[in-house]
Each structure stands twice: as structure tokens, then as C-alpha cells.
Amino acid sequence: MFRYAHASGPGAAQACVGELGHIGRGLGFVYFTDSLVSEAGEILAEMRKTGVRDWIGTVGTGVIATGVEYQDEPAVAAMVADIDAYAVFSGRAPLQRDQNFAVAHADPAAPDLPGLVTDLSARLASGYVVGGIASSRAKTVQIANEVLSGGMSGASFGPEVVVATRHTQGCTPYPGRFRVTESVDNIILSLEGRPALEVLKEVIREKSEVLIGLPVPGSDTGDYTARNLLGIDPNSGAIAIGEAVTPGTEILFLRRDPAAARADLERILKELKPNPARGALYYSCVARGEHLFGARGAELGLVRRALGDIPLVGFFCNGEISHDRLYGYTGVLTLFS
Image (cartoon, rainbow, N blue to C red):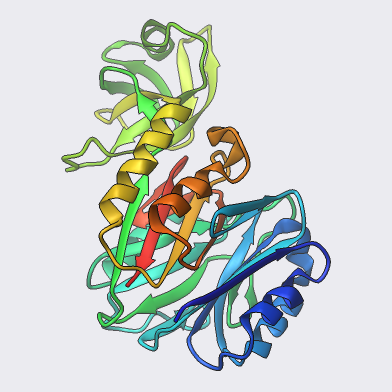
């Protein structure tokens, strides 16, 4: 059995432990809102009263559990997974060999986060990593059998642990792909030989939030990673985006789209539903949740209606990890069979 608990308000961690009871074995996942970040050590100590030795987790501006999301209040969500073939890793405990899959949490200030994700993926038999980047209005921390700052940590799993995972986008691409013809780091000067801002204005005719999509090489599903449009220069016609690009790179223009986000989430839930699940993890972008789906808990309500009341925990991320890359504006759902 996977067992989970969630609570808000003073004493949230103690309430979760009271609900979990004494379990004594397995791997624990714990997520807590940023108003509790200074209490991370006490939260870990409290979780160990379940008799479970190994815990991983991190802080988020909001946390997730079956059918609910907590925002702007002290809250904790915890789950104990009934599995044995795992190993906790961090900067102080290197990844073990012959592992198949991993759940990872990372510091948003860590250098070259996309590279860290790619490197971790390359050391796993399946190449699959899921997880998220810590989010906080204060400092960020991770838990990997101790409270840590910086880098990446989590747990890796042997081939005996059966999982199914999908990621869901929260944007809709506008028609067309455009080749970068001149750029400096993250500043795009021209697209298809024309000022980048001129192309953007030609494509985006209505008032909407514009994002930049970077197509995933080799994807046969039109997959992309979304990055922020950081600024425009009306004088030079340049645009600045949230990632460095080189000439020859193709980009898409995207809009955040609540209807498309709902439809895409329902699509992955339909794909995953035939997989029997004992427990689940869900990592969602800080820009999703009630901000995208219109009401608090609406996103998690869709998951619950599709999968039922299985134990599920997670948090709202500053970037989401799926397979071998770092995404934004996505949700990453993983089921343990």
C-alpha cells in the first residue's frame, strides 16, 4: 500500500504524521509550502516518526495532494511509497549504478540546470527523470535524508519499480516555425532575415500573453519547451527570451491557453488511465493551478476524476522535469504500479 496525508495550518506536519501512522519502511516524499521553509529540519524529523528512514522532497509556493492544492498558507503533503528498490542521491550521496528511473528536485539557482537534467538522464537505463525545480518566495531547500541547498537531489529506482509517466503542456502554438538568423545569447535580433519583433507582431494580432517555444529535436508529436518572452526593443526590433539560442534554431510563438491546457491534461489522463496505480506524483508549474484552470483545485480535480482517490502528492514548480529535459508551464504526472 502507498499511504499519504496532507494538512494545512499550524501543526500541519504533525497532522500528516498522525494520519500516516507508524509504517516503518518504504520511501517517503514530502512537500511543504514556502512559509514553512525555515522549519524544513523539524518537518523531516517529524516525518521520521512514521518509522520511515528515507525521505526526499522540497519546498513550493504551493503543494498538491489528491484532489486539492494548497496556496498562500502553511501546508504539507506527504506520501510513503511501498517500494524497496530505490536509492536516495544528492551532492553528498552519488547516484548508484544500474538504476532505471529517477525522481529529482533541484535548486533554481543551480548552474546549468538543463545540463544537470540531461546528465542525470544519461546515467539511467531508461533515460527517464521526473521532478521539479523548487519554488519559494524566500529561500529554497531540498530534502534528501537531510536538508540541503543547491544542486539536485532525489531518488533513483531499479527496474523492479514499474512506472508510467506523461507531461502535459499549458500553451497553444500559433501557426508557423521561424528560424533564428541573428542572435546574441538570449537576444534574438532577426527571424527569417527580418527583425524579430516585426515577425512577432505579424503572428500575434490579438492581445495575449506571448511565450516562446523551442521545438524538441526529433519529436514526432510537435513537443516543445516553453520559455518566457523577457522583453522587446522597438528600436532595434530585437526580442529577449528565457534561454540562449544560436542562429539556425527554430522557434514557435505560443499563448497560454486554459482550454487547451484542460484538453491536453485530459488527453494524458486518458492515456495513463489503463495503468493500474498504487500511488502518484504530480509536478505542476507555478503558472498553472488556479491561475490557469480558473479555480483552486480544478486541475487536481481533473486528475482525481480520471484516476480516482489514489494517493498523490506533489508541488508547484519553478520548472518541471520530464524525460531528459527541463520544461516550463507543464504538468508532469507519474504513476507507480
